[in-house]
Amino acid sequence: MPGPARAGLFVYAKDAERIARFYEAVAGMARLHARDELIVLESPDIQLLVHRIPAEIARDIVITSPPAKREDTALKFFLTVPSLDEARTVANRLGGDVFDENWQIPGFNLCNAMDPEGNVFQVRESVA
Image 1 (cartoon, rainbow, N blue to C red):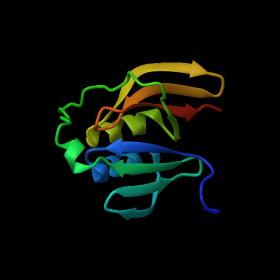
Image 2 (image 1 turned 90 degrees about the vertical axis):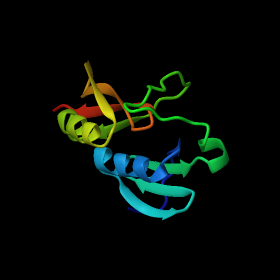
Image 3 (image 1 turned 30 degrees about the horizontal axis):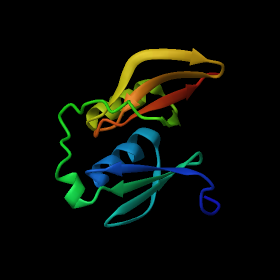
Image 4 (image 1 turned 120 degrees about the vertical axis):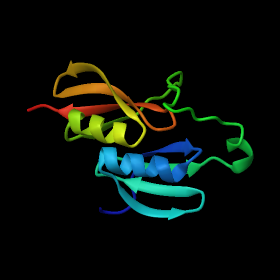
């Protein structure tokens, strides 16, 4: 990839490694580098920085199984995937979900999804 991304997104996670593996698998992202508190992932579309929540804060956060949806936020990002069905299968295997309700907009089929910590985002599949 040609140099650092010009735009990206931070995801704060209790289990940064698990969340990074989830986005690597579901969105086909590549791991650029990692250190204790930060894992940097990238695709041709976006750079995702998975930042570990500090232990003193994380100990008060409970992640249920399945995770409770955290959708009451001001921002929601989207990722384009080759196949919604494939993303659904991979997400379910890794503790997340790609929801069943799909929408169509010009050029895309899309639906909401959730990572293993309950963060809601959207996945899009291009249509020819």
